[in-house]
Length: 249
Image (cartoon, rainbow, N blue to C red; front, side):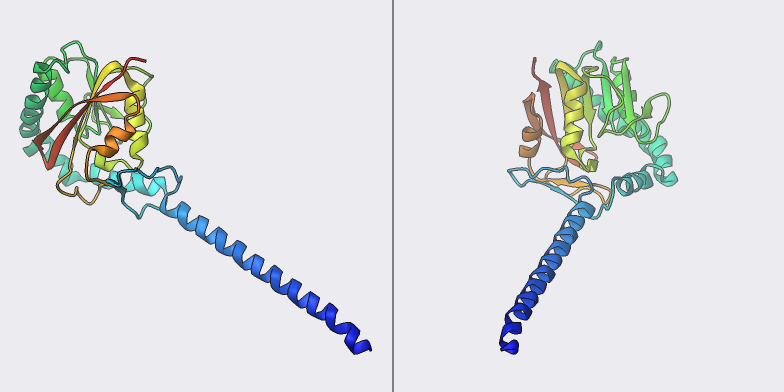
C-alpha cells in the first residue's frame, strides 16, 4: 500500500521538474534570439521596405563600430590627399555641371541656403559657391573648414526648416536610411528641394552600409515630399539622380 501511494507524488514531481526545465530552456533560447537580433541591428530601428529593393548590409555589432568603419575611409591619408589634389578640380567641374542644370530647371537659386551631406573635403560646396549659391555648407564626420563642418547625417546639427536645397551622393553609407531621409525632410523648408545621386545598376564600395536596387524605397521613405524627376547621370560611380520637393505643410 505504501509503495502504491508514493508513486503518484514522485511522478507528479518528475513531470513538474521536466516542465520547469523545458520552460527554462525556452526562456534561454528566447534571450539568445533577441541578443542575436540586437547585435545584427543594434537599435532594431531599420524597417522592412515593402519593395524589398533596399537591403542593409550585415556585420555592424554597434553604431560605434559603424562610425569607426566610416572614419577609416574618411581619415585615410592617401584618399584625403587624392581628394584635395588630383580629384579636386575634376570633381568640382562635374558638380558645377549638375548644379547649373538644376538652376536651369529652377530647382536651385543663387539665394538658396544649401547643404551638401557627406561632403568630405567639400568639392560639392565649392561647386555650389562657384555657381552663385554662396550660402552653402557641407557636413561630414570629419570637418574640413571652411567648407565642411562636423555632423552626422543620421542626426543633422541644424534646426528644423533650415535649408532650401540639400544634396547628397552618400545615401549608400547610411546605416539607417529612414533616419537619413527623415533628417533631410526635417531640415528642409517647405517647398525645399533634395537631390540624391545613387547607384542602382551596380553595387557601391566596401564602406557602403546599404544596397539600393530601385527608387521605390526612397519614395516610401520621403513621407512629406513628392518626386520631381528621376534621371540617369554619370556621377563618380553613381548612375541615378532622384529629386524630391518637400510639400507645404
